[in-house]
Length: 228
Image 1: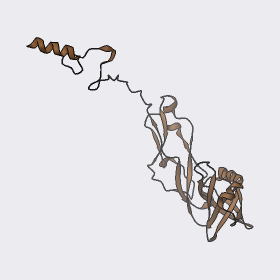
Image 2: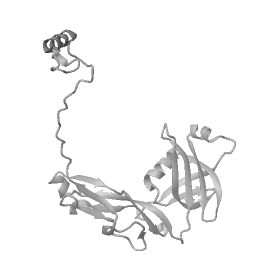
Image 3: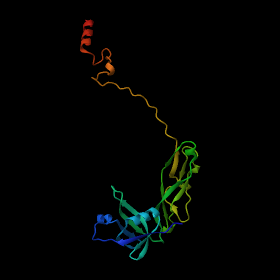
Image 4: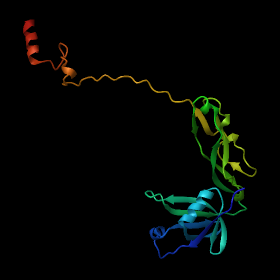
């Protein structure tokens, strides 16, 4: 059963700029959806961080706004590109009687014999799935048992996921989630022989072959005279 997550949100102080709010440890946000009046708000950065770690983007968060509790999904989060700090939050108020679409993480569990015994490489192709269901039925995650991967190129698709009642996975059932590749072989290193460019002097004082460019002028002159 999912644990309850709450977050206190206050009406935003419009006299302050967003950057000033962030300096004070607050994060600007908006609350919208489910006939909720689009509200510009703010919340404590540390409190939001704790709620985000617990809920992610697929668990309901009870927003306490103006004395009311509003069930919301954390719809979008933007970060400062330099510091990584929270920059802005979108909170989507949901109607508990209407279905919503959400992304649910896929968690790998177990050990693949093809990896442990054969030295294969486990490749995760997709780490989340899109589902449609009532807000209260959104799974916290999907567990993927990889102990069935016994040989190279074995894979697990969406069709193998056990779906709770009332939940529909929107991804194609044939979509590969994880697979095992053969270990990469070291490529044979072929030595490269450097060829002197035109006009370059051969290394180690070697004398160019007869007729080759770069021969000493005196030697070339003697050879011409001997041919006459």
